[in-house]
Amino acid sequence: MSKKTEPPKKTEPSKKIEKVPAEPAKVEAKPEKEKPSKPERKKKEEKGIFKLYKLEQNRVLRLRPTCERCGTGYFMADHGNRFTCGHCGFTRYKPAENAHV
Ligand SMILES: [Zn+2]
Image (cartoon, rainbow, N blue to C red):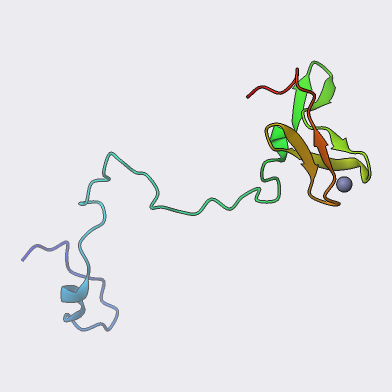
């Protein structure tokens, strides 16, 4: 019996010693300390909005056209050969030269 396992006398029965879990220090931290599949839920609002803007020098470029009906602020989704507005359903086909298949 080593002395260091002796607890400070706090009117606690010696029984408790047996229940003390292994020292955490003994368990060496594993090299791969990756977090267990934790759902990343930060900045959920932004979703893919960053895709719609591009910063160039001091200007903000919008990579998507805005809806003609709804006005600025309503981006149209890129569907390959056309853009559609999710707000009003407006669809605009891309000019052929601009459409990259
Ligand atoms: Zn619209």
